[in-house]
Structure formats: C-alpha cells, structure tokens
Amino acid sequence: MLNGIINVYKEKGYTSHDVVAKLRGILKQKKIGHTGTLDPDAEGVLPVCLGKGTKLCSMLTDKRKTYEAVLHLGITTDTQDKSGRILKETLVSCTDEEVRACMESFLGEQMQIPPMYSALKVQGKKLYELAREGIEIERKPRPVTFYDIQLQEISLPYVTFSVTCSKGTYIRTLCYDIGEKLGCGGCMDKLLRTQVDRFHLSDSLKLSEIEALAKEGRILERIVTVEEMFSHLPAYETEPRLDKLLENGNPVPDRKQQRFQRVRMYTSTHVFVGIYAYQEETRQYKPERIFCTPEDFRHNKEEL
Image 1 (spheres, helix red, strand yellow):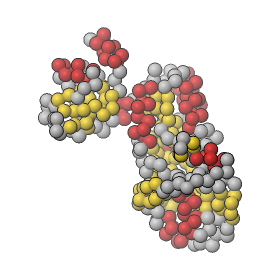
Image 2 (image 1 turned 180 degrees about the vertical axis):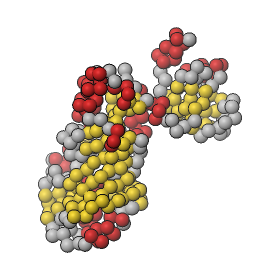
Image 3 (image 1 turned 120 degrees about the vertical axis):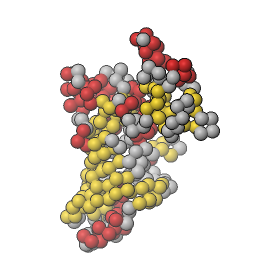
Image 4 (image 1 turned 30 degrees about the horizontal axis):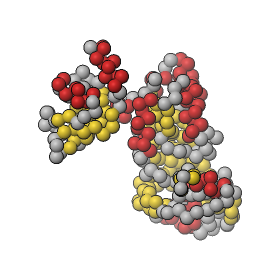
C-alpha cells in the first residue's frame, strides 16, 4: 500500500470525490482521502492522502491556501459564480482605484457568510441540497482571514487577483462581497488554486500523468512521505528500553533534557513512530499523532 501525500492537479469538471475515486482505480488501493473540497469548476492543487497519510487529511485542511481568481463585476448569480442562475445585472461604473481600495479593505480578519451552494451541513443536510430544493436558510457568519490580496489585472468588468487565505474561506463569496461593496454586484468567473502549504501548482500532477507514472512503476518518486511532511520538526530517538512504550502508544520520559515543543519520534532502531508533544508537568513526550502500526513494529523486529 502506498503511504503519503500526492499533489494532484484537479481539472475542471471533476469534484474532489471524483479525483479520489479515479485514484483508487489507478493506484489500486481503497485507503485514499482528499484534503478539502474544491468546486467542480475550479482547478489546481488538491493534495490527496494515501494509506497512513489519510491521518493527515484534517491537518492539511487547516493550512493556508493560495488562489488566482477572476471576478466578473456587474453580475450576481445564485451560486456566486458564473455557473449559477443570473439574478441581477448592473452597469459597472466604478473606477480602477475604487476597485483597488475595495479589495484592500478585505485584508485581515473578516466575518464571511458561507454561500447556500456549499458542502457545509446543517442538521445533517448539505446546504447545496437545500438550495437545489429552493430552500434558503440563515447562515451564521464565520471568521476567516485574508493574509494577502494582490491585484494582477483590472480590465472592467473583469478583475484578476491572487489571494492567500485561511481554511474555510470561500473565494466565490469574496467575489460576491466585493461586488456588493462596490454597489454593482459580482460573481467568480474563474478559480485556480496555486498552493496548499508545501504543495505548489508547479509540482502538481494531472490524473493522466499519475496513471502513466503508476504504469511505469515510478509513482513513489512523486509521493511525499508522512515523515517528510514533518521534516521541519526535530527528530527524537529513544533509548532501547523505551521502545516498548512507543509500541504500546504510551508517553515516553524525556531523558535527553532537550525539551522540544513537538518532535518526530523514532525508536532506538530509527523507526518513525509519529508526532509527539512535550508535556512540561510530567516531563514526558505524549503522542499527538501515531503513524506506525503494530505490523510496522513487528516487521522491524523481524528485520533485526
């Protein structure tokens, strides 16, 4: 079984679930999960977790993301993007400077109302399912953060920009909110995700490219291991007598007096176990996320 993360270029027309289903067929394994929904009409970076890497899905969902988007001013739709039904068309009379000032005003922490056409659940039902039934319900604003917004081109009624934002941010809604603030309405025309944490557009692979690599037996070349995902953390190797504690998923005492906040924990034979966090009150490293399975421990013993 393959373990780790692969950087997929999600093409237009595919849902994130479609990508996972295709990969299960290409890689011939079931344990695969994506790291957050990307709209069918959007394209770009979609990190997909394989095997043990599926334990990282929620961690990657929390990471900052960067997009390139095209905003179409003067048009309001029910989905907040160009795929929706047009609700209103308005003459765009704002200037380039007004557009620039408006977009800059969204920098920092904001309260954003999620769109009805989204995968968020209310009482067990997805919002887009309610929207398709013609039902609109009140949605509570949620805190989001726009760390950076860079205008790339203004050619009214189109505005091209890049944005780096926190988890749970809807770029469709940002486009809608900008249009509302300018008084002419707006919707998202195009969306390209260019980065999720360490995964960049330039390193992403289309499904056809992944299939070709798998057939050539070279797919491992493009999979980031779970261990590599935490390369920024210091490595901590235990003494042989503490290996049993790691095998049983127990905290281990700090004998080295190094006291890092978080570490990559290894057995005395350099088997990567998982991520451990230091507990000051007990002077122990406590497991935060374990990736090593009982089979891994057994296999390591057989090799020694």
